[in-house]
Each structure stands twice: as structure tokens, then as C-alpha cells.
Length: 373
Length: 75
Image (cartoon, rainbow over all chains, first blue to last red; front, side):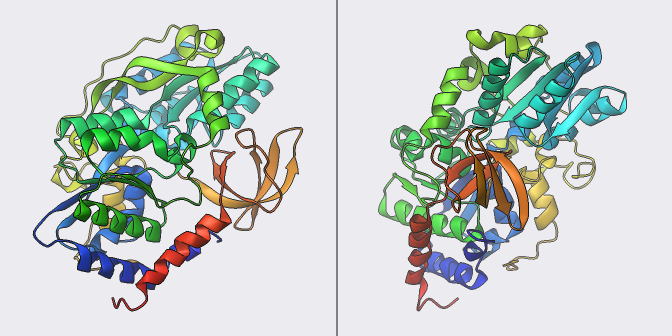
């Protein structure tokens, strides 16, 4: 597959890793946070961490939308689906995320609610067109990558006058979360592997302030294994030279300014949300978006008067610490025992991009020194 | 969640802002609402049914030639 296979060359990967081993300073530690779950998945799937020297550690970040969505937001959607005669549409990842008392959208569907998995926001629009007598709610989640497609759906719904379509908006923003992690300092991060596809939208310049303020280097990295390893080398060099710049390894898809058309569309439909609760990180100001007043007719929270629900996380689950980069999945007593991808107790075990699911799927039986590429 | 896959644009319907792309042998219709000036033959990144960005072939080549510095490095 073009633009995939050539970035998965095992021989080049091993040579790049050797270069990293010769360039790291053995006297110091390198803690590199991969913000994105896509990178976490690639690091485990291709065994990249096993190619790295002992003193270089990948720290998993909060860049997995289903992992950071608080259980209360899912609980509110379940309540809505059970109270009203609606069709609730959402991306597949969200179906199994634990809400309160072991409940999930999947279980609510089994009890009889009309909850449908969709691939695209355009599918939700098609369902609304086909069911004019029923209300269709799109439970939308995701970072800046997934936000423009939701904005596009709202714009289309307005143009077509689709009055039975609305969006339960849970879109969050990358830079504020990154700032929060760096300002707390608890993960002791020396460098950041920056998001691939979030950056295609927001552009590389979006991180400049963050790098300057916290004096931490960032390299925007593609999701393929050679991208991740090359970006790691670029970070090692910045750290060795005491630089803290934004560098762009994924230049084949990311520009300095990003996708302006997508940005304009997001700005037309959404505005910053004063406060949004993140699982693990707590309430963060201006870290999410909400639908502008001009489009309130398409805002499910307004249309149905949805209220925030407070749900306690399951006892013993350390997802919040994993999402902040201060704990490893294997530090959790539930990991691999009662919490598995088949029966997830915590959100990080649900999505394949969650740190716990990635570690369980690819790293459970690690003996060290083994790589899959 | 933020996964996006490269696909080749096979045909365009400019009025509907859609394209048919070839995803490793599979044909799929996607929205081009987020991209201006898409052309047949372009490679684009597909995410949740939308083309997010064009892949720049020259930049991809540049990244690949950076691996040339590996000549002489023995794993």
C-alpha cells in the first residue's frame, strides 16, 4: 500500500534504532510522551519500545478520545436513549466504554434502545433523512481530526433543514491538554511525539507556544513505525542539543498552518466550551468545543436538556494515572485479570489505541529484545 | 480514533463534493468538503469518510531520502 509499506521497512527501522543507541547520552534519561493513542498502538504493535535503549522510555499520553471521555457523558447518552424515542448514532469505539455500574451503550442497546454504530457523520445524516418521524442524535467524540466532519454534518443539516438531526458534542482540543500535562510536570516529560492527523488540521505552528513556555521539544510524527523511530531520533537530537523546537517529521501531510478550510468550518459551527471534564485530567478550561448559539437547533444538549451526571470510576482502576503518563498499564491490579479488551473495566482497555488495550494485545508476553518488524 | 489512511482519488463529483477513492483495492465514496482542488490521481488521507489532507509526494520522497543517512549503520 503506497505511503504505508515504504514506512514499515524492518531493516531501516533497526538501523535507525542503532543510530539512536549511539546518540543517546547514557548518563541521562529520555522520557518521551506520545500524546496520541495512534502512536501508542504503533509502538506496541511494531515492538518499537524493544528496539530502544534502556534509558529511553515512551510515556503514554491522553490522546485517545474514548479514554478521556468521562463516564458521566456516556451515562447521560444512555439516559437520553432510554427516556426518548430517539436513534442514537455513534462511532464503534464508544459502544463498549464502561459507564456507571458496568453499563455501556452496548448493554443499553441490548435492553432495547435504538443505538447504531456508524462509520461517518454522513451516515448519521442518511439515517435522519430516512427516518423523518424520529429524532436522530449523533454522539460525536474526537480531537481536532474528527471535529471538522461533525461541523460538516451540522452545516449540511442546516442547509437541508433536517430538523430531526442533532449532535451530542464531546469534541476536545489537543493543545490545552498538552499544556495541562506539561504544567503539572508530574509525568517528567523530556520530549513529545506530536499528533499526526490532529496536526494535519491545526498545523505545526499550533504547538509553538507550548514548546516555548515549557521548554520541551516536540516532533510531529507519522503513525508508521519508521515515522515514529525517525521522530524519536529527532527528539533525542533536540534534547542532546538543549533545543525545544517544533519539528515536523510528517511533512508529507502536515503544513505549518494546517487545513484552513477545515479550521474555518470548525470556527463557523463551534466555539470554545468554558470548562470540560476529562477522565484523568479533571476539568480543563477552554479544552473542548460546543455548538454556537446560531446552531442550537442542532445541539442535543440544548434540545433535550441533557444534564451532566457524576459517575465514580471503578475501584482499583488506574486509568486516570495512565492517561496522565504517571503510571503504566501493568501497574494496575485489574490489568489482564478482570480487565481485558473483551470485558473492559476501564476506558483505556476499550479502544485499540488505549494504552492498556495496546499493552494487553501486543505486550503481555514480552520477554524483551523482541521486535515484530 | 485519529487514524487516517492514504487512498488514491479515482473519480470526482464536484457538484456533490464527493470522490471515489481506491483504498488498497477497495473502492469507497468519501466527502471532499474539507479539501479544495482535489484532483484525480492525488493521494489523500481518509478519516471517518472525509478526505482530510492531500499527501505531498515530494515531501514523502524527502522523508524517505533522510533514511539514506543510515547507510553504513549496522544494526
